Structure formats: C-alpha cells, structure tokens
Length: 319
Image 1 (cartoon, rainbow, N blue to C red):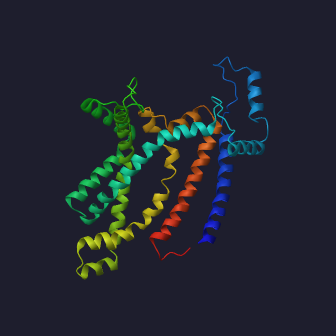
Image 2 (cartoon, rainbow, N blue to C red):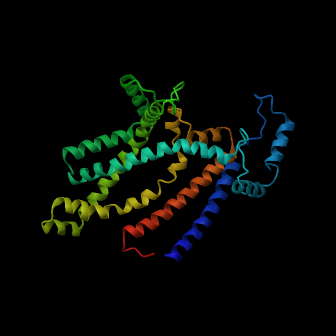
Image 3 (cartoon, rainbow, N blue to C red):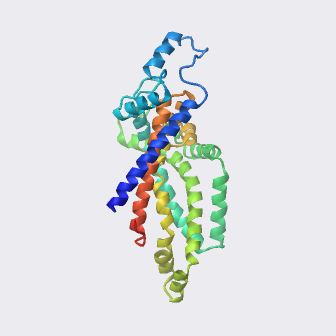
C-alpha cells in the first residue's frame, strides 16, 4: 500500500511537470503577446511596454520565463498582468464564488441520477423508461444558454424572484434571514441549470451499467434462488454496478476550479469560468497558466483518490 502511494505520487509529479511545460509552451507560442502595442490605447508608450517586458522577464528565453513564473507561483509573488493583483488571491476569491454552484450542482446530479437510472433499468422498456430516455436526450440536446433563458423567464414571471448575480442590488444587509433567502434564490437556478445536463448523462450511464450487471450469471442465480427483487437489484446488482462510478467520482474534482463559462456569464456570476475567459481575452498569462496548473493538480489528485476508493470498494483488487 505504501509503495503504491509513493510510486503513484512520483508518477503524478512527473506527469504534472510535463503538463506544466506543454501548457507553458502552448500559451507562449500562441499568436499575439500581452506587450504588443495597442493603437487604440494611447497610454501604452514604447517606454512603458519595455519596462513591462523587463519587469515580467518577457525579454528572456522561454526556459528562463518558465523558471521565473513557477518560482513566483510557489512563493506566492506572481501577479496578474491586467490589474497587478496577486493571482492566488484572485483565484481564491473566485473559487469561493464558484464553490456553492459546484457543490449544489454536484449534489443534485449524483443524488438524482442514480434513482432515475436504476429505476429505468429495472423497468426496462416500460413507460417510465421511455419517458426518462426521451427527457434525458431532450436535456442533452438543448443548448445550455437557451435552457437558461427559458428558466429565467419562467422563474421571473411566475415567482418574481431575482436570478442575476450573487445578490440583489440595494438589499437590506441588516437582516440575516433576508440575505440568506436572497443568496438561495440567486444560487438555485444556476445550480439547477448546471445539474440538468449532468443528470441526463449520468442517469444514462447508470442505466447502462445496471443492465449489464443484471445480465450476469450471479444475478440470475440470485433470482433463481427466490430472493426478493429488492435484494437482487440493490444488494447484488447495484454494488457491482457502482464500481465504474468510483473512477468518475474522482474526476469531478477539476470542476472545483473550472466553473462554467456559459452559466456564469448568463447569470453574471463572478466565478472561475468567467475569470479564465476574461484572462484569455486579455492575454493575462499568469491567470491562465495558474488556473491550468491547479486544474492539472486536481485531475491527478482525483485519479489518485479514485484508485484508493476502488481498492476499498472492490477487495479483489490488489495494488
């Protein structure tokens, strides 16, 4: 066990190094650079641009820029080229904004997908299964921005509650109950929108996996022994059908940092997705590279957690 953990950490550290190198090269080899002259902004004089290049080591070779960037990143001294603020402070601020959307959306997705998919597999070919299948493919096919506007219109016209931003402008902050309900209303619709696509896709996976397990010999043997249907479905079939989802569960960690550009843009939610999109438009390389590096760390951490959980769930696996 300890040797597996040590070997896995070494492998993932090497992988992370190559990911950081490749992402750094791709970002800096892309067309355009942050120090090129903007003819529409007279404030950028050639002297200012030269000072900018020297301050951020843009005159040095790429390998030297790589060393300076990650040295500043690990020491917490890296700043945004756009507003000279600390990159880690900006990411932490936006991360706290995206965290509620991620948590609520993930809970809705994983809580609803399994009952829907399991029941659809048990009653395969019935009215419930056909209705769920139609609804799932409908939700997968509808563009996210179109579905978002439909939800906004329905909620605003029927419930008369605010849905744009994180809080209502001019709200009385003296009442904690009022502030809490306002935050809940602002959080509810974006979270539901983020969860609908996940529920539609994940429930299909659950149904497919349950149908595959239900056809195994040991499930047919359990049925032939006269065991109650609930015991066959939920004790024998479901436990084995859940194994692939342990791996999927570990891969949801990057959602902590990724956010959703479409949802956050439509609902004016100041989260990670909007920040990364704005950084790309502004060629704010420190923000882009830091978000990419943290996402890579979360992906590798998620796969590591999945390996450990798989060992716990399936005792037949030996590391």
